[in-house]
Length: 420
RNA sequence: GGAGGGUUGGCAGAGCGGACGAAUGCAACGGUCUUGAAAACCGUCGUGCGGCGUGAGCCGUACCGUGGGUUCGAAUCCCACACCCUCCGCCA
Image: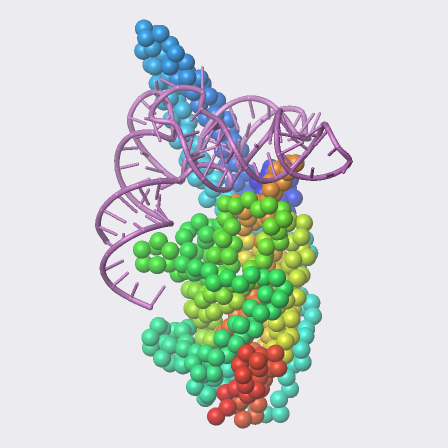
């Protein structure tokens, strides 16, 4: 949710910022109009209710013979209140629906452009240079029986896979490695629920905008979280932090569910884009002044994790046109994938400023003045399936086996993987 | 799945139709006293929305699990749902 006070005070500034990400100015004008109508009606309702309350208050002590006329008068005021309340409810519902669709204001430093216009800030690690024809992850994993895509499709359909043998063990190792790094940086480990109720989805900004991307249960009582960002953010919904509680940092491990509607025919090979994957996700609640620093901090942890895995990747500043509804700024790590000869997204970290906290009502106590909405940030520590692709493709050897990077060896108890 | 009990401010806990945003205690915060601290005493002490001063403040309104209903008036009465606790069944 954007800041309505800011929209009232500086409508042109807000419109200018949001036009960078392609919002129709008419949508914003509509919200402003509904907000004004809403406020006018609130004043009317409050006044009417005040009159009604005063009228009924005096009835208690009134003499018996006066009571009936007073009750009649109060009844008429009651009707008036009822009518105005209905008008208000209608306008408020319209207003809420319109306001919920306005995305967050982009950070001034976020680059212009749409998907593909990202700015590469830096790269790390060495791009592997093979003296043989590199295989892609499907060949590498299938030939070592570390993955079963055919039976994944038989049981669950397209975009599902079994990880087995070394593939399964690789997941456990990567997850524990990533959690350990995040914990070293003060993040509290969490296994969150992944079936969540509607308020958690609205609160984090995935609804209403990304409805086509989300699985629901048959009775539609639950939504399947597409990332543990959802239950981690909602963990503190409707709460007021003591300033001493912040920063509050978590690292969650959970499966992630995505419909991938509209991605038909895209990335159909292997496990790059699947309906269900596992992810270790960092999440922070911070003082509003600190979110810029926290964003850099989370990004640096991601770089530490992948540098430790000796994976070559680039850091990309994502353009405003490619931001999710709740993000003000986003950095992705894109790893080199020899099987595709391309850099592909393996992590993503976003500063959502006060957009989620405003919807979730996660605030911070302020002694002199209004309580502040905290800022929230999220970032991938390990997206298991994509990390596996980058790892096996970059560290593959001529015989199809994979050299395990030093940092992962203690977790795997092995120096070589996928050997036949 | 069956039976019963519960849900009130940060916590504990009263209130069961008429001035209740809600007694009281604890915690917290400010002050007096003290060399300092404790104790004692005095005061403050929820959140949202709307408005005014847009400065600490003031006014109105809403909120006693959630949503409906009855009533001139609901924390208090009625209905539904959610969650928590206890017991039985099932289960990892």
